[in-house]
Image (cartoon, rainbow, N blue to C red; front, side, top):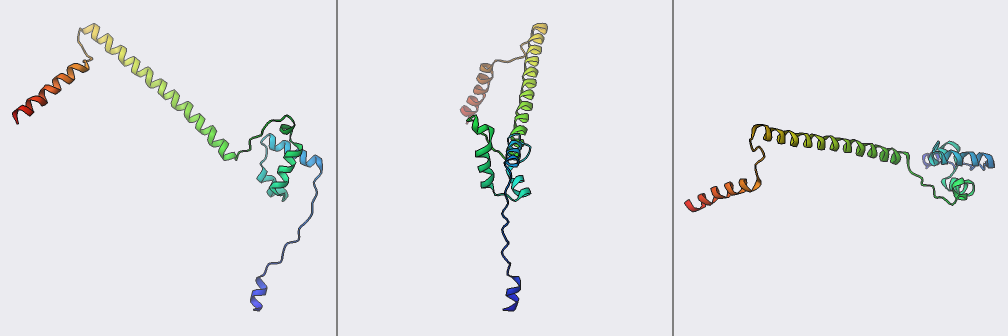
Length: 141
């Protein structure tokens, strides 16, 4: 029993802190400019999230303008930026491929007119030749 008493934690004494109005306004401005995050303020100054949201409600410039401020995790913001960059890159690649296809089509047209050869075969001629060969095999069986 004596051993159990050694491991009991003593409750921490809560320290009552007060922050000046200027300090609160400064931290809210930093939040609005994305210089810091709510979690950083909580950890650095040992302030609860609830208190910080109260500060936002009271001192935020966005609230006075009746605008909504969207609070995102920085990793979400970075992910969105990376995805937008990826979309731009893929659109660029699709544009290059489209140009390549158009170039090849034009080359085929030039070759057909220059050599009087039908390079592009019609789809209907392929189907008719293919269907006759299967019909013959079926008749032979």
